Amino acid sequence: MASGTSRDVVGRGLRVLGRAIREQPRIFAVAVTGSVLFGLMVIASAYVVGAVVGKVVVPAVARGSVADGALALAAAALFGISVLRVVGIFGRRLGAGYMQYRLQATYRRRVTRRYLDLPLAWHHRNATGTLLSNANSDVEAAWYPIAPLPFAVGTLVMLVGAVVSLFLTDWALALVGLAVFPALFALNVVYSRRMAPRQARAQRLRAEVSGIAHESFDGALVVKTMGREAQETARFAARAGDLRDALISVGRLRGVFDPMLETLPSLGTLAVLVVGAIRLRQGAITVTELVSVAFLFTVLAFPVRAIGWVLAELPRSVAGWDRVRRVLDATGEMPYGEVALDPATPAPATLAFHDVHFGYEPAEAHLPGAQVLGEVTFTVPAGKTVALVGPTGAGKSTIASLAVRLVDPDSGTVTLDGVDVRELTAASLASTVALVAQVPFVFDDTVRANITLDRPGIGDEEVWAALRLAEADGFVAALPEGLDTMVGERGTSLSGGQRQRLTLARALAGRPRLLVLDDATSAVDPRVEAAILAGLRAPADGGAPASILVVAYRRATIALADEVIYVEQGRVVARGTHTDLLATVPGYADLVTAYEQAEQEREQTRTYDEVTPLTSGLEVEVDR
Ligand SMILES: Nc1ncnc2c1ncn2[C@@H]1O[C@H](COP(=O)(O)OP(=O)(O)OP(=O)(O)O)[C@@H](O)[C@H]1O
Ligand SMILES: [Mg+2]
Image (cartoon, rainbow, N blue to C red):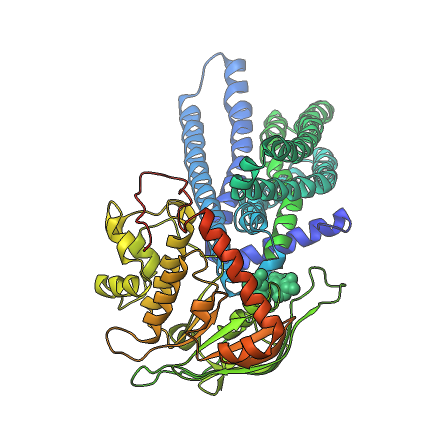
């Protein structure tokens, strides 16, 4: 990803830093002021030490006694300088820390916010492990150089100050400075260029390692039951090994360059002493000046490293930033419209598809995207139930996603109460439709929180009402802590059918005007499934029933629908009542009969919901 020459890495890295400074200008100013104060005090200390040696120590040695007044003055000066240095360090550290962690927090928020705005199609193309590392290590990496940045900027100011004061002292010594400082700078640049590809590689491998780990943990059940532990471990070990090698190569380079960076100023001190001795003999400089300059070179060595720290972190920062920006700049988000669909009295909504065509984006841009739906037109009239039936892969889930606007059609329209769903506000869409997905998702939280999802106006009474409608009140009441029972990560302590009914209750609690059920009760006993649907069509409280689009297979369920839409390969092949289709559409009859046979066989060998939950101890109420 971090392609291009190392020169553009430095250039691009500096631009990333520029962005950081623009985002936090005041804090940065505080940190740099502290750092400059520190730098100036470093120079001042060198001159005071020189003065102490030249004006106090040397005369004292010559005379055999110390001038108390001069010594006290020197001590006071050094004390004052130390205090200012402490103030400078404090301001710099505090400012740099604030800036770095604030930027990290800001960008973590922006990245995760963006994840939620990006369409499903984008998420299909991006692995969860990558998303985690984008929000974590990439954001951190992008802002690593911020920590030493104020120090480095202050050091640059200090170097300029040092060169100026050198010229004011003696041109020959200034020349030594002019040779050493740029050499230090050049060494730092070479160092960071060598570092660039190594850091970028390490950063990429970090993301890959976290991706593999995430996938293995996620698929722990498959890995265990298929006896794939050894292979998964090997796959992880190989990548972890690559990461180790990449980091060692980073360390090796550090090992070579760090001592060089350390040695160069010492060589400078040596050169100052040689040149200084000659100049002293010539009478061009005083002992005070020689000591000051020699001391200056010794104290400069450390701060100059700060420039190296920034440069060394730049490649990692650029690699991290590129990955963060890929998320922030990702397009394809689906902006919401302005129309609100909130009738005074809640009534069921009408859903209509008009000549909808749709294809998923290809995994890679150069591949052609296959069309999944074509010429799909149908209506779910207000208060009616329409069953969507078709073989696997026919496009039923895709139609469900379009109906709740998880994706938008390539052409044609999806309307709710006659309004194109693209024109609806987010709030209006959320309060009008609810999807119960084919794969139920349960949060690692209490039963109550899983149903309310913090939506306003859903109290315990509404929760129980929703649970009753979803035929889930029985098993929830039997849980050890009722609504307060924690259900484990992804609902591991629940059976498949219980999870499905919990997600159904979640959808119902929001009192949607259109309910889209994508095979949402497949793990529930067939009789219970039919009971749920019957209950939804005729609510016990006498309220208006929601309109329902239900993907189903079971005869008993389908028979409850007002109309059946039969899809094959993304096209609506036939529509009518269940009885009509059974009689006239051979494909439909075959499918329903085949499913029924499979179901009967299944029922002879096992009952629904008997799959033992991973965590036992929660007694499962047997479905009626
Ligand atoms: N995220 C995706 N990216 C690319 N193609 C997809 C994606 N999801 C589904 N498809 C393809 O779209 C077609 C329709 O899939 P869809 O999930 O809508 O079928 P379905 O009728 O719900 O099937 P099932 O009964 O198995 O749930 C299939 O050919 C499938 O391979
Ligand atoms: Mg499906």
